[in-house]
Image 1 (spheres, helix red, strand yellow):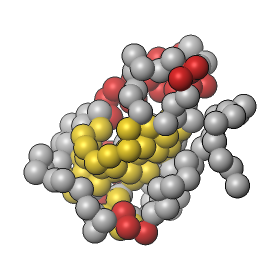
Image 2: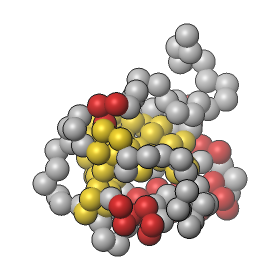
Image 3: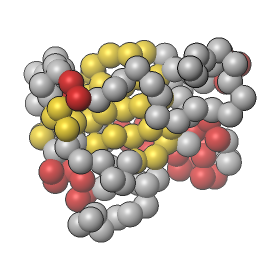
Length: 140
């Protein structure tokens, strides 16, 4: 692996951003989009296809699925759609809420072994990481 920054809590290091398409502002998202980076946490998954030059905003597909008892509406809203993804905000949640406050709800990490793949080849029906103790998920 050529990744110089192996810290998975750095969501989009420069070396990852360099291989991604630049954020165009014109993307709608499609099954043919190449996904260059995968972020995941207990609240969901983010599949990134484009990144801004300053690495603060990305475009991709996000699946946010937080349980109501987690009380995360102030930070993340449940969704399953293509759109802009605020990397700066997500990194701030990791730094402040997870690393500093030790709140597991805000664990978001980068898949260090991810290889670029077409979106159509990703199984988005199953979350990558499950929060311990959830009761409303069908795990069969």
